[in-house]
Amino acid sequence: MAERSSRDGERRPKKKQRITGDDLYRRSTQYEVWSFTPEQLSQAKARSNEKGRALAKARFLEAFHTAKSTNPEVFENHPQDLNESIMNLLTTEEESTYLDFYIQNITTTCNFFKMPTQVKLTAASFFKKFYLVNSVMEYHPKNVLYTCIFLAAKSENYFISIDSFVKALKGVQAADILNLEFILLQSLKFTLLVHHPIRPLYGFFLDFQAELLHPAPIMYDVSVDTIGNLYNSAREWLNKYYMSSNVAFLFAPPHIALAAIADTKKTIVKEDPKAANANRDAKKQPSGREQYESLVRSIRKCIKLAKDMPAADREKSKEIDKKCFFALNPRKMIDKRIKKLTAEKS
Image (cartoon, rainbow, N blue to C red; front, top):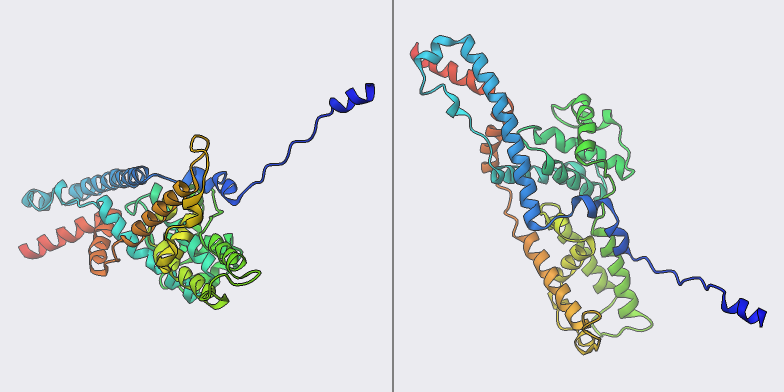
């Protein structure tokens, strides 16, 4: 009896719960720090713009009063042309347009250095995150972009020395990048690990092979080649739309990977008979069909947001670049106007 009671009193070890990739992602800093709703993302961009405008305004007023004390006669004779209204700062929309143009240079620069896709995607992630907490009216995108690439290369174990890096960049010194590196790290909140959709995309590629081809092909028109072509096309989709859009802030990497697959091969997103016939207790958890339809809606929303991004406008970006330059260097704008007015008078 004692032996039996001893056995009855034994505690059996609990079955270990399986940790999925999604569980790991939801515990990551990317999910906790850099995931937003569309409204939260818009608010973050507006806050960075307001911060930049406040700093640019203070910078302008200081330069304006200095120039006025240095050239009192010019200011007195041209009150309509030399006043605080000449300050012209960037709007949130202009900042977005400007950054969309600059982010294209990440691909060009990374391709020049023959950097892998992972470095390119990480650099783009760093760049977009930096300008969620900072404004182009604080830091010009040119050197920030190069700093993001340099830091991304180190983060992704693709080493390149600073001397070799800047040697190929026109008008850039090592100090321009190294002085920004810690500021970039602070803006990133020191979260250097980036979860990209490339990895889950490869996982789906392996799953497709396992489910559709083994132990024997279940569809006559599916082979290793067709699945491989789908994978390559989805990677191209990610390179084209994922980098330049905001979907990384709004969707989990597997969702973005599925969006790339679905938009590449649109016939994939259709009614799943297994999901439609699934019979589960609706009170406990959604049915297979409900889960499937929810996933499809999410995928289609991701595709729409990724592809609705306007194309980078070079001419418009040039005009914004002028505004950005003078927002960062207001004294040059004021001196230029003074020079023009004095030249007209003479």
